[in-house]
Amino acid sequence: MPTRFVYFDLDDTLLDHHAAQDAALAALHADFAAHFDGHDLADVQSVYASANRRLWQAYGEGRITRHDVQRERFGALVDAFDLTGIEAHALGEHYMERYAGAWRWMDGAKAAFMAVADRYPVGILTNGFAEAQHAKLDRFPVL
Image 1 (cartoon, rainbow, N blue to C red):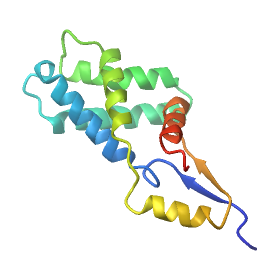
Image 2 (cartoon, helix red, strand yellow; image 1 turned 60 degrees about the horizontal axis):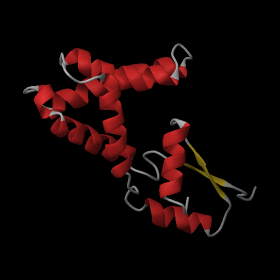
Image 3 (tube, rainbow, N blue to C red; image 1 turned 135 degrees about the vertical axis):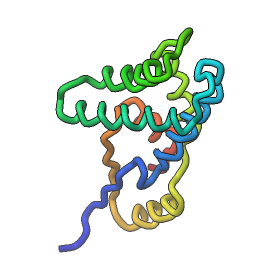
Image 4 (cartoon, rainbow, N blue to C red; image 1 turned 30 degrees about the vertical axis):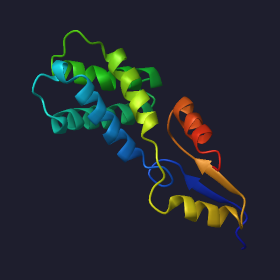
């Protein structure tokens, strides 16, 4: 059967989600260093990753809403590090700004995508939240 259409996953196939996430967490840690009071970046990354994984699983199972994911993953940082003078919501907004600023192609992904798109109709699949994924598509219009 001939190929009629090719789908690409967006995050960590075409765009380097994990590198952008790591950069956003590093910026969050640096920009709010006084609040993290001696806790290193590895601790922040570990708490965030654990909370994010747990929350996305619960979201995928329909036990919580997307707003719960967005709020609680930063609430986990506030709780774990006993952050005072900063709200989870502010951390989340700051993270998302830094995350969007760090979006990049995966190595070789643009060339591969273009080579396939020159031969076949293509589409994008993603399980991320619509606003962030639409913003990525706006930033990378070739997609």
